Image (cartoon, rainbow, N blue to C red; front, side, top):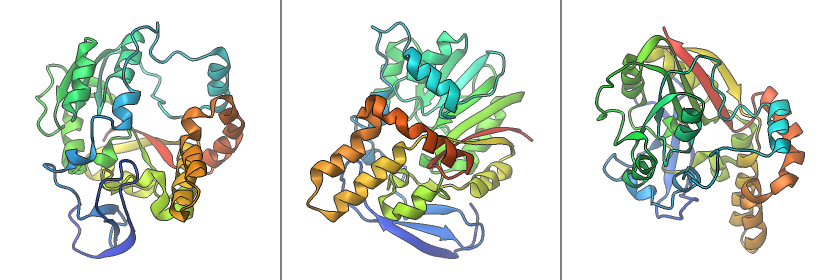
Length: 303
């Protein structure tokens, strides 16, 4: 971010998601406090760490057999209303033009389209972008830096767990700022490297996601980056879910060796725990209130 070299090595880790080769270092700038992966994979080599079976590409595929791509049971809707997970929380603003950065295969685009929004996306993966286009959505395959200027300004720009993947967040946030109406909103979710999860699990923390996560933000450092790029934070919502915690615990058990079944069950529990997972929501709610869960959703507007 323009700081002189003054880095402190925080941790070293490996690619736990796909078990691809390499040992990667996370350093913390001694001046501004921003943590980053160093050295980072280049823009030409980073795609190696995003195979076509990358989880977000698969989990955002649209099931055309379902009436709503994000339909929930009555029980799940009730629980969401009570605990306010804050995972995909957006401001209460009139529908208009929306851009999703890192839209993957288009599931959130479909949801917002059903809510009356005119949607479009940017997605680095050609395969995932193609999946979204097959369902009728306008999606540019490439980076923010190379995307064409929009024909109309947006009312809402969102990015779900994508900004930690960007090589040049300042420049890309400045560009997105030009694409937004004066009263429009930016909403992004990112891992929280100041969370209790990170302190407990260190290089086993699921939110670390080396080497694909290039920057590792805290509430203070994301505010700094947004301020430098012309944005003002309105609100930080700490997501009230514990999926990262169980996946991190699974990583830690896997490091002990000899317990592969337990490690796998812990890692898969947030996705396959079904209704048993609901018992954990009160704890997630409390940790979220204290700002100690592993993910946060940030709302910002133009200065």
